[in-house]
Image (cartoon, rainbow, N blue to C red):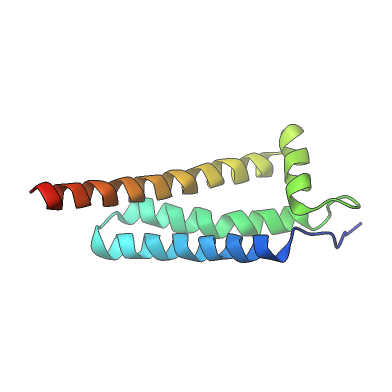
Length: 112
């Protein structure tokens, strides 16, 4: 049975804003730095995470929001739930590497 319970609106605004920023950062990375394969993977993962989550969240339990449903399926070992987990980890690593490169570039230009 489909449930209309969902996470708060502020969460979805933040989530999709970060999704758009991640895709934009990958596109800029392709243009400026030439990290084509890694950036393309980032774009694919970033777009596929919400799609996989929506498709598998259609028939979530009564009184269960998306996060509760995902955690429940993660505990039972569902493949799609682990795909989302590793996708989120990949996106966090992507942002960490961009920030690290940005800091290192700033350090080199100040001391160079």
